[in-house]
Image 1 (tube, rainbow, N blue to C red):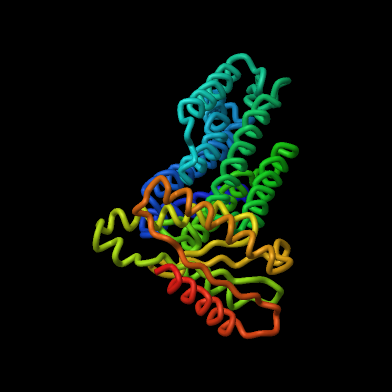
Image 2: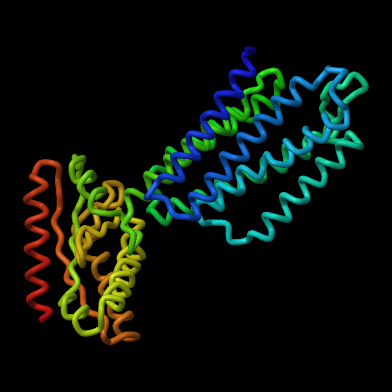
Length: 356
């Protein structure tokens, strides 16, 4: 078996394994299962098409027209991989535009099979790049840029967690794809795309695992991991919704969930630029300020005042919305985290008693 055949085999096996893994997962959404599965199916198909055209090139017994059509199909499917990634993370809001984008590109590639302006198959049945090969590069680049933009906005929903991993994934994708474009003898582009798709799937899973399903804030597990790593000057702010049990008993759990979502959005809007926001219990929330965004206690007071004003405005629109008690403590790197949490809780409960 040749080196290239081995690369294709690895790509196909990796894709099959990932499709099985994705469809057996209880973590990802149905949208993500469908999107990532389609993505790996396209990768597997394009890798096989490239393998077929590789062995067809220069082979006089292989039909030249079929060679050109296989190459057209492979080129047409390439940007589709990136588009289905956007679909997988639920960010494909302009699906009609995406389909038109892919359709226009596919039409150009199939026209090239007959005209040769992007690529052509010469008289010796050898694949050659045309004068306008940059059209393919342009379409693929636009798709990758769009994917990165959408993935960045997706990460913002999770407070930009693991953004470094996202940058590493797309850097590897660009290097793998464009290295093959510069030297067609490398023939590892689809293996690079498959590996990047695996990395992006892992990135997606990590974001989902760290988030709270109802409020989309970071969850208790992520909160505890953050506390375990605290080693620099910061502050911890604790929130608790007043008389939340009464809200559930009076208006029902559906309204209680709506209250949690409203409060979490208020916390996120007021604190997300200064720290990480968590839901740590049923009606309990926490913000751990970033060390670069925290200077003095005055900063905490201003942030809390901004939050109180936001809650007040929400209560004007919905008088049944409960108040929220807040407490905080400063961590200087020397005191124990347990003491910080205790002191913040004590201040919060003192404020809660005053709100009754």
